[in-house]
Image 1 (cartoon, rainbow over the protein chains, first blue to last red):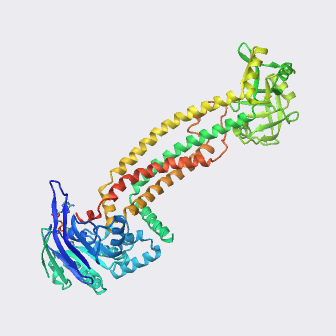
Image 2 (image 1 turned 30 degrees about the vertical axis):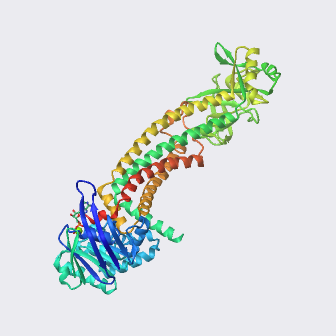
Length: 225
Length: 378
Ligand SMILES: Nc1ncnc2c1ncn2[C@@H]1O[C@H](COP(=O)(O)OP(=O)(O)O)[C@@H](O)[C@H]1O
Ligand SMILES: [Mg+2]
């Protein structure tokens, strides 16, 4: 269970270009379900995902994970908690060029100290499930958009996190590929993972996958269903 | 502990992959780095080796050498002076020495003929310095023929080679017995090249020297201590010069590294952001970058040091010979005795590895402490 109460996020506070990307957000996200943040570009979806996943701290208000206030945790603990709890799929894939698919997927496991062989095994397993087994040694920059998105998903799952956060997972893909990604998300949901996505792609909402829709506008929650 | 090792291993794996990604840049950097370490290590190794040779050379030198000057030039000295010297308080031993130079046209260099004070070779026999034997392609059992000062050719059978800890000491040396020596140079009995004194207490050498000068005017007195200081001064000065020069180069290189690193490219910043966002701590990023810098600079150090070692001890320090060795004409070719000093190795290591690694880490630290949500925006 993730709870946000009166969360504000102000960028460049006190400067001329101050911008309030989150305003008094109250939100509860239940485990094991698919939640989607919906809103036009600039409405604050990415900002809110960052707050939920502990990538950034609120300017005011609280973010609680299973009752524990994570907004006040020191960096080390926050990072550890994030690593154990969340997998992130960023909007621009954010793979590291020059490294192979396998190396990219293994990256989040490097600081855990888990035996190398074990990580390789799990990574290959994930790549197999996502139909990427034969691409393991391919440098990332050679992947197509659909492949890159699946690699990003595999990387988000390498530490087996209970919660997956995906920022506009279909934004750069055509309909066929979008449906493929949605199918993968459906499977992850079936495995019992909590999914939190952002999107303004109707395809996502028509797929019948999303159980909880949060409508955003100008950093505010305007509706929930 | 196991987890720690696994973690470092993963970070190192990633560092290696990372270095491989920017091949051209890193190879260029590695090359420049190797060159720098090579030059630095060459100077240090060469200078130290020379100093050590000089010290060995002086170790066997007498405490005081007395020469006779005639019109300001070194001349033969009469043997009867020895008794007067032995009578001086504090002098333990006094011996007449016989040595001299023979210009060898085949080698276009001087050979030093010397009569050893103990165990002289038999008549018609000689013991050669290893460098000299090598230069002439001679082995024990061979015969060496030289034209003496009277024009007559004399043959010496080589009975052995000088195996000295220092090649500089024995490089051009040719040991013969007294009769052969006197015949070769035409020096009558009762005269020596110079006289060598051993004193009971080296601290008194200066006082004894003064006494000799007053009692035997027209002498030149050379103290071992003075010789040592002269050698050291010469080497220190020359080495200092080179080190200053290299220091400048080193500073320039550090600046370059700093400049390269502090201007972390947008790409590198983005990557650090990604790593932080997917669960790396600032410390993990730093460790990875540390390994990256340490691997590069350690490789450069090892390669540079090995090259310098080969250069100095197997290549005769070809690059520095004219600068560091003032009397290179005398020794056309000699090999320095290889030696590695751990202290020196360690200081070279830290001097070359630490600055670079530190210079790369500083800017990374700045980037790595940023909020990781930066990657979420584009
Ligand atoms: N670091 C930042 N500094 C200043 N403004 C920002 C920053 N990040 C986001 N914003 C602004 O906050 C608003 C919300 O951004 P974002 O959360 O990315 O929205 P969305 O993901 O819905 O497009 C946008 O107007 C954006 O320009
Ligand atoms: Mg966005």
